Length: 428
Ligand code: S3P
Image 1 (cartoon, rainbow, N blue to C red):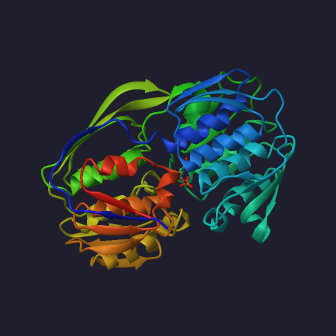
Image 2 (cartoon, rainbow, N blue to C red):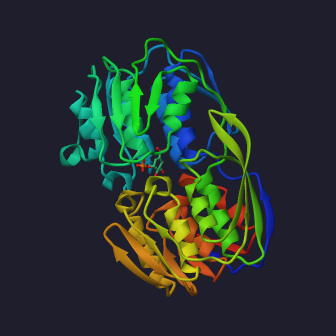
């Protein structure tokens, strides 16, 4: 298992144009290209394990992918190929859950599987809603755990009310609704990220929003191909926003990110904590895209209990800012953190304790008393966002992070960027 030593940093001023391309958008580019009959052109596709697995699956379904670095041309199959092997989603919950919705109405038999971590994550949240509209899906523990088998069939129109705020479930149901037998509606408890709706509408689908309700009209024609440059991932960029927020007299310009409001909430929380943050919108292609300028300022504690789905991937990194803020920060209503790549409530709490921070764990969150961090030996629990969050903590007080291979699932050049700020010793 690989580990890394990250050393305390001095102040820095940087402009970064190499943040990893957005993971959510990249997955969807590969998958949605199959909804067209023409060739999709995708520039800046994320070259990380999760999204490369999705691309492999799309190829197994019969698409032809021409690749020049991170630029792709995807020619969709004339007729979908029934794969002769399992479809391996690796570590990616997004791939597995979206493919459930995508495949359950297609003609054929499909088996989705993944790595040891993904095989422990709950799938009933997509399997049950899909079964309720006729999908034939099964798996271990009555369909809650992968491997999952899918026998494609006709799906019924639905009016579904979800009790879980999850873009993955919403997206799976939208994909199912597109091939169902009538107009469908999906009601979510909170607005979750909306890349699926924006991208499919950009391709010519008819998906309408009314508050928290999404109306999906089944496809009556094939869609236009995608022509997109994937913007940088704000969830990946956020690690460097926190790096700036905890290193006095530092400043960073993070370039060409999606500024989709469902994705930049964590930057707004940092702003609320005192950090100087400016959003600079430059263009709008499927979604607003631009730069974020972050400047160090003293950090004050904050309470976070709303829009949790907009923060779900950034709370581990935010917790490092909480640990160095004045006062007690509290996270509530965040039970969903427990079913991510690791149980993120427990991985954050256990690792902060190792850093000497006073923390309290709740069923749906945690509280952090700000103060100092001390050097520690951190366990990533195989979760990329835990590994990167505590690597950033190293900028404040040297850290050793164990089990860092997981970073390759979303941000393979993370340490290249980090080493512009401080000394990074990678060890195998
Ligand atoms: C994602 C949705 C989120 C997020 C994940 C990516 C997506 O999961 O945590 O990293 O691309 O739809 P949930 O929708 O399950 O909260």
